[in-house]
Length: 504
Image (tube, rainbow, N blue to C red; front, side, top):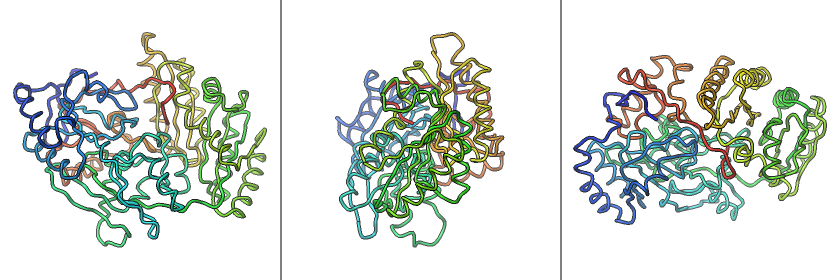
């Protein structure tokens, strides 16, 4: 996995990727100390047991020396204090569903799994807020809030498994974030443990505190500035009416034009998702949800709000879809029918396992007006490399997910997929877009950061990181390009294994 480079350098400190003799000699003592903090049953260190924690959703690898499962802020603080005193890197981890290598213990050391801190501590229906621990599963929060007529808006496709702490760290998005915004728009306050073990609260429940928006700085910081141990998040009232459209098009250009037409009209649907022909065939082959197999592309469009508003918006959107060349538009208002439509969309990544055993997933953003041009160029790249590329899009906000499918057992195919993915990222940036819409930078895209940031930009971001984590012990080797001692480092094992149970 690692090539030539022996160190990862960020800021003013280097971490050896090969455990030092001192580390080996002191491992037993360290394990005992960690067990003294969280209990013997809450520390994993046998090599066989560590295997599952060497991966995240993108199947990059990095094995920690130990995995620790704290159950309280106090325990997190003590673990970080211990790690800081020994100069040991710490990687925070949620459910491991991330798609950019963010939860991988790239520099070894301690992996801090927060899944046992999974309590919903309070739901305040009057103020529409919830106080939660980081290990709370995203969908479980909405399920609990539904008793009060509320829900948590950010909805990653992995919401049945992903956790709030991971959502905050990666600033996760989701299909319904077109209207309501991504995670950062719903986080009011955070309890954070810094790398030296100190604990602080940032923000408040009412967005009324003056000063710098430090909560905004921490959301999306990918575990590099601090470990989140509690979060106050905002909840939204469940809408009176929800309706979902399935619009069928003969090709992806017509579907893209329909997206632009709807958004240009001033209507903002709750969600506007696109799948191309290759994805549709894969979903139908794997799950048979009733998508039209002969379609060139489909749009899933959802609208919510007051019943009268929803009916009016749906009528306008249906008309605009037909004006843009839709062959058919169906609509679902019953919950079970809508869930069936969305199940196919949210299971699309897993369904691609029917086409090939491996994929490389690109997460880029472009202006909506450039969707047609960019998707055409993506298709040309697929033809150039002889690789099928399936497209799944959060089309309403221009967030592309080209999935390059291949079989790594075929010589050279993996390398070709990586080259194709790099070209797609550059196309997105050149179109006025950016590197990632929701998956984060992590290991996957850190070498691409200079495409959108100059040296001064990155230097300023590093200064912010050094303010919160001056020794660089938290999740080292992520997000930023490596130092000069690692000029030849290149992470290439960032492909995943497709199959049912994968999300995008």
